[in-house]
Every structure is written in structure tokens, then in C-alpha cells.
Amino acid sequence: MRAFFDRSEPRLVLDGEHPLWDEALAAVNRDLAATLPDQRPLRLIAYPECEDLDEVYVALSNGEAHGSPLTPVRSAVEALMAVADAAQDTVTERLWRAWPVCTVHDLGMHPRDVDGRPSWWCAGGARRGDPAHIRAAIGELDAVRRTPAPTASAASPADASGAGPQVFATSAVPLRVLPADPDEGRRRLLQLQVSARSVLGALTLH
Ligand SMILES: [Zn+2]
Image (tube, rainbow, N blue to C red):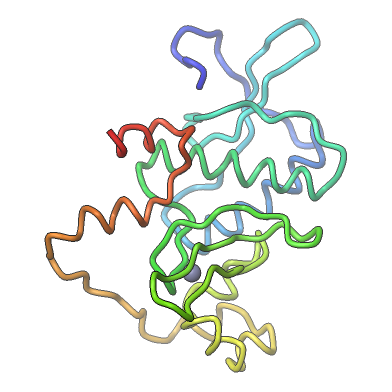
């Protein structure tokens, strides 16, 4: 984690400066829009390090970022994995919430490379027969955000046809009312699924 307050002012990264990261961020921003519609798109900011070298971060629209700078990548897959990871750090730590959340299990998901396809991975339910699963490719959460469990979504016409979120836009939002039980705090910790390296994770653990 870098201390942002004692550094020179960041600048916005211009379109085309880092095409692989731009493309990756566009995909991640689709997922952000699908899951947190009130949030404005994430963007890339850069802190000048040396004369020709910048440290680039994934930031909220207000310029706040968290975590490590992006490291150089050689492929679109590497870029998407790196940008999704950085975006998750920034959203989780700056907005103080798990993101993105698997709506089936109410758990925070993590980027995982599935045979060259960067995807959101969920740890699954605690019960037997409810294993870890891949929720969606990164950039495609809008297609699954309101569908039920993966087993059911396989038979969902919307998923099968790729008809997308419009199908669900007019349907009732499946609000889940959480009981005010004493396990809520523990469940909340589980939901975060925070990584050990995060400040939030450390604070939550201790
Ligand atoms: Zn899940």
C-alpha cells in the first residue's frame, strides 16, 4: 500500500497510453455498472515516478485508489487479470464493501484465469453439493446478476440466448432480507472474502 497523501499529484491516464489496460478496464467497468450502478466508472491514474516512468493505478472516479500499481503486461488476459484485481482492491477498500458479490452465495468473488478466460470465482456455499464455481467471465456479470443458482441458470432462457440484462430489467428485484441475527457479523466477514494482504482484511481479522 502506498501512501497517497505525501506524493505528487496524480494525473489521468489518457486514452491510448496503455491500450491493454484500457480494454481491460472497460470490461471491469461493465461489471461495476452491472453490480454497483450508482458508481461512476473506474479510471486509470498515474503518479509520476521517474521522468519516463509512471505508476498506474485503478482508481474510483474521484481519483481514490488503493493497493499496488499495475505491472507491465504482455497480453489482454494478463491485463484483465491485473486490472480486475486492482479494481477489486480499490472498490473493496475505498467503498468498504465486498465487490463483486456472487448473488447466489452472497460472497465476494475473485478473479481467476480459467483456461485463458479471466473470470469471477466464488468459493461456493458451506453445504455439501454447493461447491466453488465460476460465476461469469470478467466483463459479463450483467448477464448473470439476477439469475438464480448456476444450476438453474444453465436452463435459463436468458442465459442460454445471451439476451442479457434487458430481460431482467423489468422483473422484480429479488431483494433478500437479511435476518438480524447474531451471526450477521461473522457472515459479513465471510462475505468479504478479503485477501490477507488487504488492510480491510487485516482490520477485520484483528
Ligand atoms: Zn457463488
